[in-house]
Amino acid sequence: MRVKGLRELAVFVSLASLFSVGQTFASQVNTIPVQMQYDMPPKGDDGAAVTVPPNTNPLTPEEIQRAEALLPLLEGKQEFWAMGEFVHLGEHSVPVLIKALSMPSPRIRYNAIETISMLNAPSAVPALVTTAKEVNEIPRVREHALRVAIRLDPAKTPEAIHVMSKDPNSAIRKAAAFHSRYVRDKAVVPTLIEMIPDEERYVAMSAVQSLWILTRHETEFHDWDISTKEDRQAWVAEWTDWWNTQKDSFELPEPRKSRQQRQG
Image 1 (cartoon, rainbow, N blue to C red):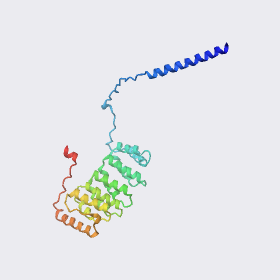
Image 2 (cartoon, helix red, strand yellow):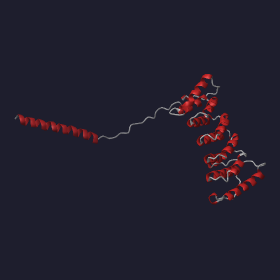
Image 3 (spheres, rainbow, N blue to C red):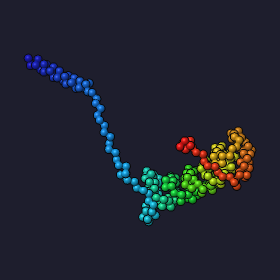
Image 4 (tube, rainbow, N blue to C red):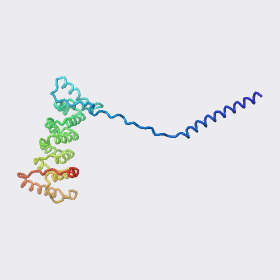
C-alpha cells in the first residue's frame, strides 16, 4: 500500500509540473505586444552650450612655456589633444609651432603644419615656404607645407613652386605643378611652361592642366604618350611664344564657377 501511495504521489507531482509548464507556455503564446508611447527627450537650450573661443591676446611667459611643452605631444596618442590646445592658445602660438618645423620627428613637423592650417595663420607662410623648399625634408611634409601656404597666402608661394619644379624627386615636381593652379599669379606661368617636357608624364600633364586652368589659353591637343622629346620641346616653344606676346598685358581670368555655384 505504501508503494502504491508513493507512485500516486509521483504521478501527481509530475502532472503538477506539466500543468505549470503549460501555463507558462500559454502565457507566452498569448502575449500581445503593445507599442508604448515614446516621449522625445526635452530639447536643450542651444544657447546654453559653452564654447571656449581661441585666445586673442599675446601669450604670457607661462603660456609660451606651456606651448613649448606641447610640441613633443604633437606625435603620439595625445597629438590631436595637443593640436587642439594650440588652437585654443590662438595665432600667437605660431612662433612656437614654427620651432616644430625643425624638430627631428617628421610626424611632429607634419602636425605642426596642420595646426597652422587650423589656426588660419598667414604669419606662418614664410616659414612654410622655407619648409617647402628644403631639399632634405621628406616629400610628404614639403607638399603639405606648400599646400597650406598656398591656402593662407598664395602670393608668397611662386618662389617655392619654382624651386620645387627643379627638384630631382618627381613627386615634388608633381606637387609644384599641381598646386600651382591655385596660385593666381602670373609668376607661376613661366615655371609651368618649363615643366612641359618633364620626363615623368604625370608631372608634365599636371603642368599643362594647370596652365589651361590658369590662362585658359587654347592649344591643340598633344598626346604625351606617343610624343618624343623633340615634340615636347616644340610644345614649350609654342607656349613660350604665346606668353612672350601676352605677359605684359595678360590678366589671369576669373576662376570658373562650379556647377553648384552657377545654380546658386
